[in-house]
Amino acid sequence: MAVTAPPCAIVIFGTSGDLTRRLLMPAIYNLERMGLLPEKFYLMGVDHNERTVDAYLDILKEALDSFAKTRGTEAEQLDTGAWEKIARSVDYFTADFDDPAAFPKIGEKLKKATAERGIEGNAVFYLAVSERFFAPIVGHLGTSGLMAEGENGNGFRRVIIEKPFGHDFESAKALNKSVLTALEESQVYRID
Image (tube, rainbow, N blue to C red; front, side):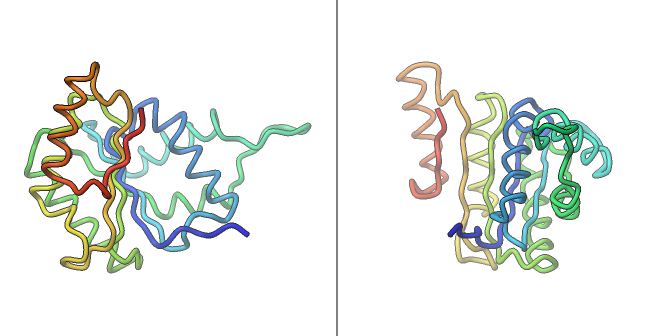
């Protein structure tokens, strides 16, 4: 028997990029279709492009239409029930990843989502960005208090760092040192 994830927010940095469109959104959609996405769920896209939530939803729907349709002998169709549930959980925030002032605002949105959606302060931050933004984003998450677990209503906090994790051994060690200055080892998932 499958186990549903606990209430949670997913914050995707670099949310308008190819990784989100081709992999992350189809994965979230498929989790919902399989009944594995938590009932209390919040998805915040963070990117440097100025856009409305509705414009962001159009991007996500287009991605699902392209990459996550149910395939079969009949015409490919999107599961509208799964999409509608996800769409009700979506928010968007415009931010410069290098701007430390943006991160407390992200924190405020998470607090609001915790109160309104019952996500229990749990959050996963997915870095679907160029590697040059890994250290600044992680540093700002740490200094803004967004990675503090059990404080101010925060539940668990995790960061997923998408590849490449450095371009050679030395740069990977330097990035790892930077990441572990802001986070506990148990809070980091490295995909490489």
